[in-house]
Length: 289
Image 1: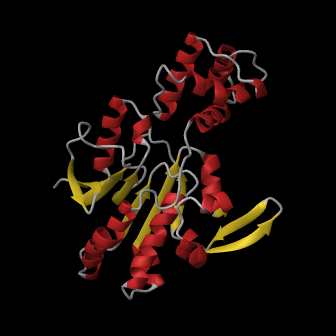
Image 2: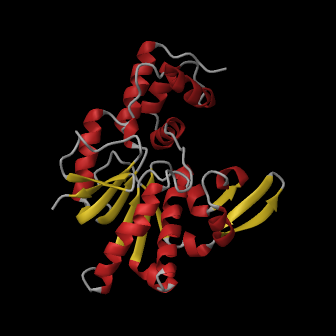
Image 3: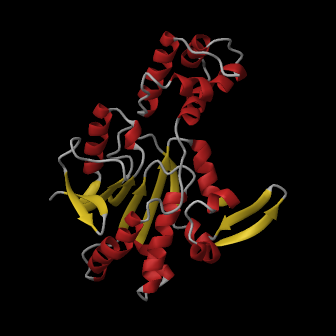
């Protein structure tokens, strides 16, 4: 049974979570603190959330406890080719444009970033889209690997370990993965608990994973990039931090670079560095000149 959190305890933990991760919890989220952190309270021998907060902020094991709290609070919801249209736009508009520049000697590579990538479905979906584009247009897999760099980052080391392993169960592959890609890029092994699907090294090797907190400065740490997927994450941030983050994003996008956010998210009102693009029902953004 979850521990009960009083108002002051909730306020302290809410502020801690926002300071450390950017995730903003409204006053109606006491149940989330109770449901997701009660286990940590018990495991650390604490009788109340207040006692746990004091231990969290004063412990020599701060980094480990902090990571456990952030991992428990943050949402790791993800699926393959989420919303479909951004990947269609990537394959049909953006990759042809940038690839023409590569062939013309105007650029050497295409750098993509999947931020808050959780267990890897998004960056791997990007990798499959990119490889398909190259092969469909008569270019080699070698050329694809040479010209494309994909970075996947997340605040949770636990989910990144799962992403890097490239192993998924039946439930995971059923969430948005087209049968064509399942048959082409996965092999199945039977386990006692069900099937395990192992991603082909051709796709795994296209993605580099890195632990990264979006609260941290970006410029000089990662990037620059030509395409950024910052999808279904800024919805959890405060209004002030959305502005900070999107302006940081603008500084690590190369001229003419593209930004995708989630279907229910917008850049409007938070940054004037981007131009709104709309094509075939897909809304995305391009860095202004």
